[in-house]
Image (cartoon, rainbow, N blue to C red; front, side):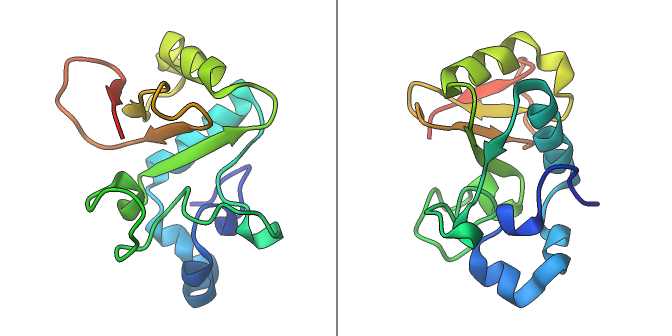
Length: 139
């Protein structure tokens, strides 16, 4: 499965794209792909990784298991998380929209506390048993 709005280079680091190419789609959870497309449709355009156009972001989607970025068992390392940098809305506005309209994002299970990540919106599709529709975690 592929995204309606993203190329695989926008979701994986350069090393993964170099070694896997289009096969890197196999590393991204399809629930995350649905969620990213839903976010784009509902809230607007955003960037995950931009390394392929000379940008600074290369680990905002899938992360290599050996990277020093993030937690040891980060959802990023399992292809279940992305950090979204929106082009037309502030991250706090995207966060508030998601929390108020959770039914529009049926696979989105977790976001990071926006006060801890004020320049991006972390979204992931991990399994959890909390009695909330969208779990809020601190990075």
